[in-house]
Length: 319
Image 1 (cartoon, rainbow, N blue to C red):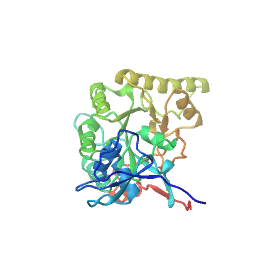
Image 2 (image 1 turned 90 degrees about the vertical axis):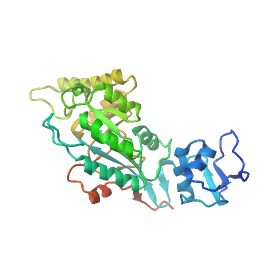
Image 3 (image 1 turned 30 degrees about the vertical axis):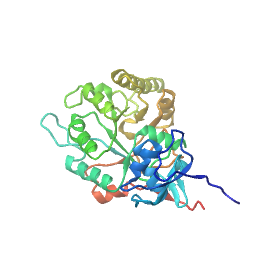
Image 4 (image 1 turned 30 degrees about the horizontal axis):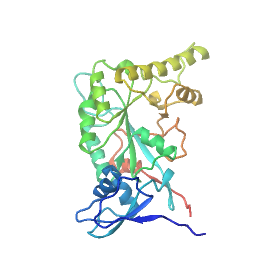
């Protein structure tokens, strides 16, 4: 079988036209070119530099060297000859240092979190949003091979003061799942601070209205009463966040990390685009959108264990 691939050469030293680039564009690198500069020149987005680096198998180019610029996704669903891409999702419950304001004991210290984010940055990971993860799972977006989704189940003031500055310093973003019924309590963020995080590119998700487990039925509570209570927790939590931020709240973290088929169906019916639980494993394109795995990171997670949680490939012979 003969497979034809369209490669359109660009004039040496010429500027690209305003038209949409072809699937593959052959260009010559200029002095000092990086994948980001080439992506800005031909794809109008420096953020797509990773596509050029991955397609060419390198991230440095000499002057005059031939470079292939992919004008469209070339690895939908993360499929490649060596296997299948998986996206690790990691989650934190609380980050920062103990304060005299509350009795909270952080799940991980500020210094340990800083070390982990530095490791991600130095290892070439790109922090993505849950929107991008859902697009990847729907075969409508390609992700860098080393992608990670960072999440935190907290509305603690310490996230705003300690964790957010570290993430921004390393060019990372995160998804913060808040329980809006707790916002404003002692030691928590204000809505103004949560709005600031949202404007800075952090995704704000929901973990119920008060963050209470949805799978534990109260003693003496009927199935119907429990069903109504769970629905209200999700519905009110989503509504409060949307009213406070003025934008849709599309992502849910099951409170305390547990769920069941009924709660997952309820989340989908209420308009959440995806929902996350706490359990080991990565996320390939075929994963259940309402049961996405998240690897828990806490004070017991040293750097070796942390790196083990960041696997990005399932080895499968696809030849």
